[in-house]
Image (cartoon, rainbow, N blue to C red; front, side):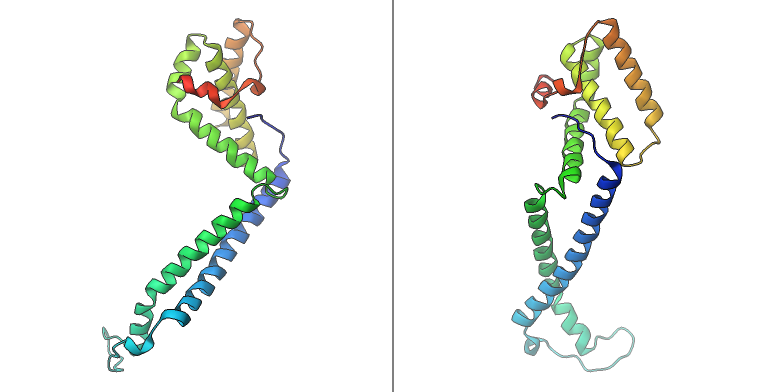
Length: 189
């Protein structure tokens, strides 16, 4: 996977639109599916009506009906979630989603590297070139994502790690690039 430049304002704008759209569509679809399922399958006649006494702790007829519809509302939420996930899956290759999908892929790659980071750092300490390539990509991608997400709390430690890695690479007279990274390199660790 290759790192590419992302415009932060465009990324943030698209991410916010996607998040708000997902939440709004999930809400609307859950209500619509739930009501449709209730209209189609709920049998109000089978509900044993309680006396309409509104004393504390007693159920009214409306409360008993809403409790029996819980499963239809829950199924409606599940259908809405499946619909939204399917829509996101279909739209991920569109131009509007390109920045957000790229960042998502980078974060997945970072997670895969992080799970093996201890072994990779040990190999890099022994001057393993593949480990140095992986660390170079990992640190560069972390910096890019931190800047895109305004996560600057740990940036000083990351900059220190990057400078230590660059010093190690220079001492070995190596020329490494993030473009050399391939996820197949992780198989060795």
